[in-house]
Structure formats: structure tokens, C-alpha cells
Length: 207
Image (cartoon, rainbow, N blue to C red; front, side, top):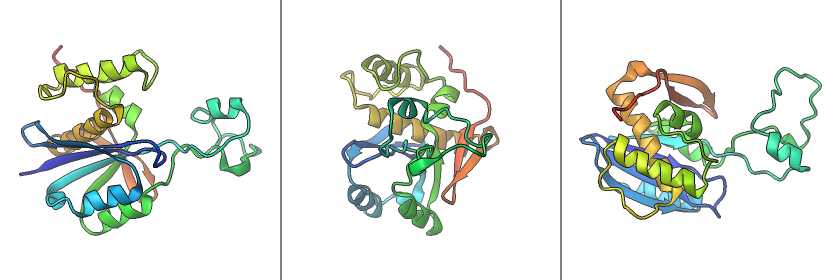
């Protein structure tokens, strides 16, 4: 039996990190929230079926303190490589956090099938992106309904679920696609020694 695990990595321990595991039949067998890196390490180190899991960990945004509202708003969009004279004081252009990278690299080096994924690019390819602002109640409700109707996760709770848990399901879905249809997966870049993957051709559901 193969399992597909998604981890929606939070940028800090004060924000919940979602974990979801689905089996080969598309059933959610585990869904949970974690906080500190010690919690995450304890969970993974003691998960009995980890060696049978294909694991995808999201790239969290870097939340380092920035000077000025315009830098905070423009951080994900600045084209820094085209401007050699760009002032990168306090490394404010770094988009992704390195939180947990050393631990995930050690898992990969020990034979665990582990990749990273960019959450919002993956949602687009899985037809799970909405027109609402990210992580608003409307966006959360859209993602929950889409997972239930488009991907037949009928055991998803009718009550509003934490966004981190639903984002973890997205990670499990891309690993399932990587296993079932490897030709539709590409490596878009490498982050701290681990491949960041995405889907080549957008998946269109039957709705």
C-alpha cells in the first residue's frame, strides 16, 4: 500500500502547519495540525508508514521583518535578477523561508521520497484556485467544496476546516499525480537541495 502525504508548512511556529495523508484509493486517512518544528519532527519520526509515503512539503513565505509597507506588498513580485544595482538590504527579497530545510533534507538523504511544492502554482494546475483573496473565508470555503466535489473527498467535514489542512491535501494530490502520471510532473527549481515540483498540464476535472 502506498500513501501520499502533504505538509502545508507554516512560516512560523505561531501558525499551524497542516498534515494530510491519503491512500491509494483516494481516502483521507489522517489529517492534523502541528506547530513547532519539534512537533513536525516528532510526528514524522514516529509515523510508522513513513517509508511507504510519498511526501510533498510546501514552501512557506519568508516573514522576516521589512521596512516599509511597499516592500511587504511587493516582495513576491519584484524582478530582482534583472537589476544588478538592486539594494537587497536585510535580504528582504528572499521569498521563501528555510524553516525545516535541514530536517527535510536529512529525511530525503535517508531514503524518504520527498519533494517540495509551491502551493498556489499547484492549486492552479489542480483546478483548485479561486477568484477570492488567498486564505480569506471565501477562499477557504471554495477550496473545501472543490476538494469534496472535484476530487471526491466525501469524508471531508461539512464544517469549515482549517486552511492549513486543506492545503496539505493539495500536497498529497500532487504526490499522487507524480506517482500515477509521472510524465505530467516537472521540476521547476531546486530549493536547498530538494526539487520543487509542479504539474505540466493543467488537470481539468469533470465538473
